[in-house]
Length: 193
Image (cartoon, rainbow, N blue to C red):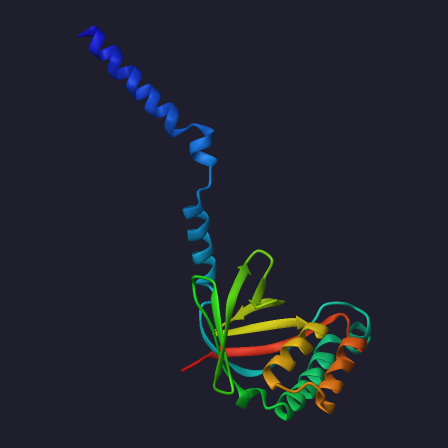
């Protein structure tokens, strides 16, 4: 009986040691990483459609001198006119983000697909399509999803969405990248109904 009790105690002690062994507690499996990624992607997953331009001032150069609310308001008006000329709201039908890290953008009836990686801690999303990779800052506000780009990256996106390579409107947007280094501009998206 004493030998049986000792054997049971030894087996339970070994199970407890294995349970709390650092390798078993702190080792991340591929399944853990995948589950974490899916949970993060659920924060932004859905089908989104263009609503209006958005502007985020970060630095203190020109924007600081003018004042952030005034500068952002003026830039939004200019962007709205530029987006209207490029027919962004009419050409860009939707952006679909799935929890498994895939995206589909419908532009003028054509689907473009790729993969994305989202980092909630950095507040960024990187959209990958063929050899193109574009990173945007992401901010979820109420039901909307805002995508902010550095102005030079925005030009890449605008060329993709508009299908135009030489245009006065794109030249006007290029002005942004030359004169507003501390400002990020982009798109406010709303859930597609």
